[in-house]
Length: 148
Image (tube, rainbow, N blue to C red; front, side):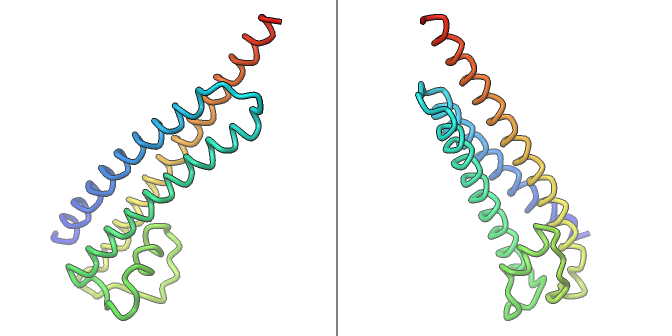
């Protein structure tokens, strides 16, 4: 039961962190995406790349939270690399070269479940930023053609 409680607590922390970073990423994308531009292709690339990098930073911070948790609860042997173990679990890569101690063997699947959820969330954010930026660029293009 302790594994589930710890896993849910860390998942909630990760979700909160992801929500905060998503708000920041969307705000940055919105302000950058709504600017007038004469070069829509590079502009769109810049908006998308910035959004992706911000989301990757969020995922990295979330993995760090999981790694710290592993160390605090003693879920894995620190010498085996808690950060590596957290990344492998969070990304669902699952090499299996580092394994948790027997008492914490459910922490890996809980980490993976959290990672899958947050990667899906990031994909949805990227898609929405792309969609909104394209809509804005099309509106700019239409208003310019009306002025001519």
